[in-house]
Amino acid sequence: MLSDVIAAVATPAGRSAIAVVRVSGDGAHTVASRVLESFRPEPERRAARSRVVHPETGEVIDDAVYITLHAPRSYTGQ
Image 1 (cartoon, rainbow, N blue to C red):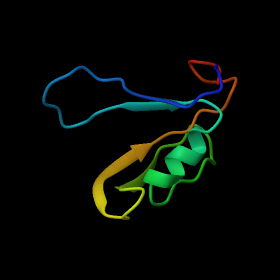
Image 2: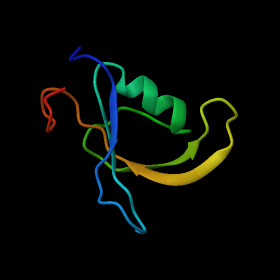
Image 3: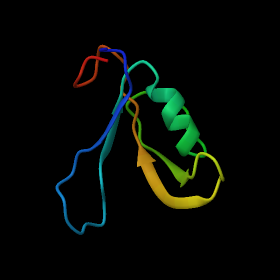
């Protein structure tokens, strides 16, 4: 179904200081809010920093920078 949430690594395999993970679909903000401690979907197209946490334990896993792109002004249009 086209409304399913899709999360995929968008950087090549191998060692790197930065990895890009794209999340899209109708529930993308819900998924992001479960793993990004301070996720806010607004303001759009502005980088924000957050800690990545395990969705069940709350254990801090990493730091992240995220950007939200709202439909239809995103690469996938979602």
